Image (cartoon, rainbow, N blue to C red; front, side, top):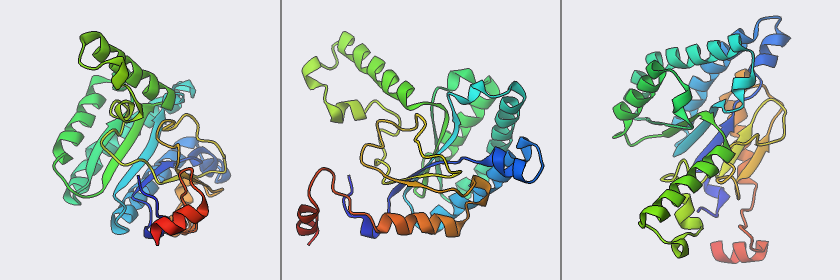
Length: 246
């Protein structure tokens, strides 16, 4: 767990919000906003690679998004599939490691296969770790980890006394990644919306009114400037942190 914000965040987690409102402001359908949002996602992934961010986790489709109109859900899933088919080769060329977190069983077998192929194609890369949260919810993640631990106890591979925060962390999504240092939400809402609930315990939270399709590299740098101004205490006093970093 990093303690010094001066060197910049190792891991950024983003809720990409505001595509629909962006389209509405321009008199277009929500689908146009999602397309613009996808194009911007490509730019931000590239910017994070250029800025030498180690890990980027994007909330692409939450477990609550199924409640949206059926037509919009269908468009989002189709856009996701087409993005996988068109973008993975370029990401692989740029040494990006792709993983997906969330409950995949709700998706079509075709989409699940494309996700698996993307992971397998890029698993040996050593660049930016790009995690994409799809059909993901923080509460689901915690419950899913609990079920796995309970099963391990039943099988006798771990005991109740061995269960602690470190062990629990091994069973949640992103188990082999650092915790997010910086959380960004675009679009003006100021909540974390069931995103990475276990992981965000000590993450710096940055909210901006900028809608996702307009969240440029310059806007990302504003978030990084905010992070650089934070003192990460992890329960200690400011004086303790200063003395520790001296």
